[in-house]
Length: 187
Image 1 (cartoon, one colour):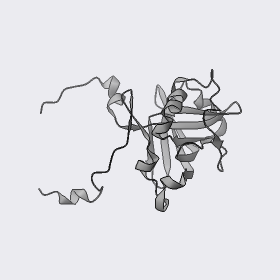
Image 2 (tube, one colour):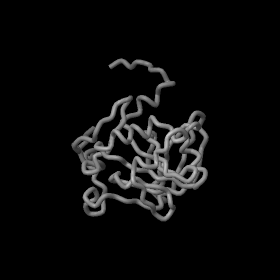
Image 3 (cartoon, one colour):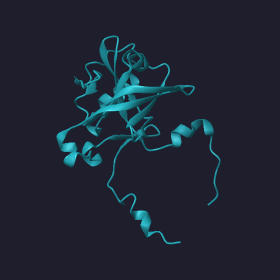
């Protein structure tokens, strides 16, 4: 099939699906949560997570103040609160009451209502232009008991919100096993 050249300035819109997460920080003494979709594992050993945040976001102040942040994975049942945290700026709106904070060792707020939470110490920042990439070393991982049978997070039970080009979706059923399905390939 013929390929069509697309606008490179919109390349971020084509990298999908993307997880919808809440970045938690303390800004000016209050818990603050910001919705982000540009979040990914960055390293396995030591475990690290990267999240890209626009320079103008209020959340960047908290990351700089604390040298830490949390990544909270909301369930689809929290789509209203999650979307609100993305459209309301923390420098104009107090978002500390949207979720109930709990704290791990690093004292960054994590949203109790979210079924999966990760606390990260700031490892590296990379200024990429419009966004700063914050790379956090994972210091703690928390999950609702019913979402982590056998100590492994279950994406269907977590029911995360997936962002694709201006819409929210949910995770579907597994349909193949990674690292084994490819063994069926015959040249």
